[in-house]
Length: 324
Image (tube, rainbow, N blue to C red; front, side, top):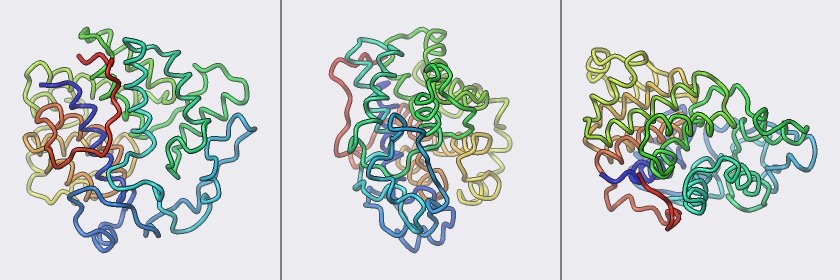
């Protein structure tokens, strides 16, 4: 079992979901894309885009992280990832690839080195070509531009996007000690996400991945490490329903951690032995499928490996990265 498959699985799940990210109307999703089973380009207009009501006002030039994409904010129908192509990753997962590289270059996780790279990457026009930049990035750079210390730039963000880097840290942080890994994950995630719910979910995902890597079956690992969040009996009952009923009616498909994390765990539990089935189901129920993909893709990728048909155009993992 290769730990790097947790990282790769998360990237694949994100890339598959990218064109249908934040489609809350699944009929519109099917009308525009059919059933998504492979990597495809995003299409403009995005039927459910709410970028028209999003805005970002950098306090000064140090907080400018939208660059040439700023022109699309506040406009209707704009796809959140309009300039990406089939198989490419959204911003948070592009950052995960950079994190893997920085860990490799430093022969282990170095928080200061990561912060330096994060700032460089976000300040450099054209590094990622993604139109949407999540709230926590905007808050971090505005807070930093105001003169706050790095440890105070994070916010009480309650979105599942905060888990995007957990599989990368699990795979490449260079330690097999669970306590040390937990400290690294908490330190890293809290740079941007200081919500207890997100930090607890990040810790839970890490523990699930560690359990699977030690030989625990997916369903057992999910239930044992998250028993305060999910119920095996409830999951068994939900098997009677289509996926878009479970993630759509019983649990919100939105980005808020209180529903998004259990929804992702359910899909990982249901498709425990089927990487392709799990990430395809996650993509096609819509909502914040990209960031749920950090959970679904990492768990199923670690447990089952990555099928050849889901080889990404480019996976950036430094040759020196230390895999567990």
